[in-house]
Length: 267
Image (cartoon, rainbow, N blue to C red):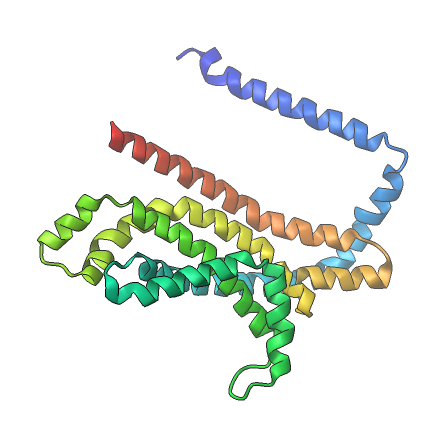
């Protein structure tokens, strides 16, 4: 392979991206309103003042995100298995899962957070937590598990019927076939799609700020209300980008590797 074939595409990419950045800087920087926008949204002094409290709120976002990933991953897998079981005895489980998915995919996540975060604590149910944070978190888990359930189910359906037939020929029951033969392949098939959901959840946990959770966005809003400067919101955006962009690149890498694996398998 000559140097032109090896390096020329990369050089063209770098040159085109650089030209685009310079053009955008010229257009934005040449605007008459840019100095005012810069002072309101990109004030470095305000960013430095807001950073500690926004970072403190961002740890709440990360904690909710991590706990949500575990809860959604387990609950969605249980739902997908129930939906995929065959036979008349499992009909109630399949119907429950269908209704569950239709219900929680049909309601916007923000509306669920408001209903659960404000509605259930107001009922004062004995024996149950009365924290709006807890019920808002439950609403996020219910909403996202409905989407993750369908991703898992797509992976289960993609496993060839011959795998099930081979497992049954070995004497495995339906649960054993699902656990030992189907699920390992199904989960491997849907990892890239699940990672896309992980990236989306990392940003959507900010919805809990509408019920008063002191996360990064809420802290930024409080700072903005006291200073009339919006630079704290930019700080919050940068923190989210610092975690979501590496995840997005990891998702791309896994998707390419999965595509290469499938291509080799087809060959």
